[in-house]
Amino acid sequence: MATVTLDKVNKIYENGFHAIHDLDLEIADKEFLVLVGPSGCGKSTALRMIAGLETISGGEMKIGEKVVNDVEPKDRDIAMVFQNYALYPHMTVYDNIGFALKLAKVPKDEIDRRVRQASKILELDANLDRKPGQLSGGQRQRVAMGRAIVRQPAAFLMDEPLSNLDAKLRVQMRAEIAALQRDLAVTTVYVTHDQIEAMTMGDRVAVLKAGYLQQVDTPQNLYDKPDNVFVAAFIGSPSMNLYEATVEFDDNGGTVHLGDQNLRIGPEVLENRPALRDHGKVIVGIRPEDFEDASLFEGDTTGRELTSNVRLIEALGSELMVHFDINARTVDSGDPDAVEESDSGSNAVGRFNPRSRVKMREDVRIAVATDNMHFFDPETHLSIWS
Ligand SMILES: Nc1ncnc2c1ncn2[C@@H]1O[C@H](COP(=O)(O)OP(=O)(O)OP(=O)(O)O)[C@@H](O)[C@H]1O
Ligand SMILES: [Mg+2]
Image (cartoon, rainbow, N blue to C red; front, top):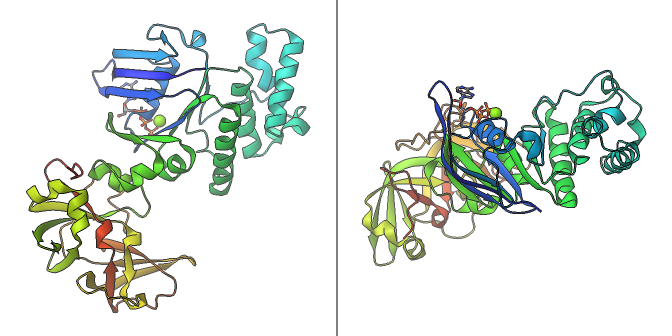
């Protein structure tokens, strides 16, 4: 049983660099919380403070009911799994998994029981006599997990444990780790810079940017209701399309002026986001799946169409990524990885049905699911709601 609570936690490194600002997080017992954000945003710093490997410069850290600010790592009852899990090469899998218990002078038969139990869960039972060099990457990663499991900690802390694996194995291991965590029901904080890993593994996801927490919520809520432009752009791939625009309202809805084109929005947009009334200028966000080849629609898309010219098509089989231009100013979300995303040099990406017959360099009519559009304040970059 362990909750992990961070209350206005700060980290200022010795050189004066303020890496974490007033971080508040409440991780529930048995929860799988993922900390995600671009490189350098402070994920490892936050995790290492929970582990006790970094001092806390301000605020309070609790594991369960106990304040641990000044508790040694070994007394925090946590187990950490790193990216470089550094197994002992000369030891067998069995000894690698049991090593921490041996150091802790746990009786031999108890070590044996726990190592066998963990290796069974991890399907390593057939490999207990092997050395790490005789294992695959995925098996080595499982040994690292085994070392954490046998300690029966109150919490697991994992820092990019899959980043040394190839893409396919990473997908497999992320499902395995998520399932294992649910079986073991141990509170887990998992760090990654990969938003897909975050979305697929976490009960909740905490998004960090430059040491500041942006939003913590379930993966679906982060996707559907991002609090700000940064979260909107960071979560989802390809990224949300973001432009400067203006809105005007009338009796049966409103009009979004996007460059030299107009899009109608229904009255429910304003009902959901009453504060939009106070905004002329906005940042408008459109997810790639809310663009579609208009010629595929039977119904009327009048007023909910853009015209453009196709710059690039990426055929992925199940969908077409169609790149085109919208002549409106794009918005820098602050995500360093998102800026260079469009290799076509165009500023919009739509996720079209593969039945679409659009062609490169041809004109295209694009239907927009305008009622799904997101709206942000151009000054604060915060979502506009009530
Ligand atoms: N010992 C240190 N002294 C000063 N600054 C540091 C120290 N360690 C890390 N930093 C800085 O703190 C910031 C956060 O680093 P951290 O390692 O937590 O980032 P991260 O989110 O884990 O990044 P990555 O995804 O690249 O692992 C970075 O700007 C980093 O340069
Ligand atoms: Mg890191």
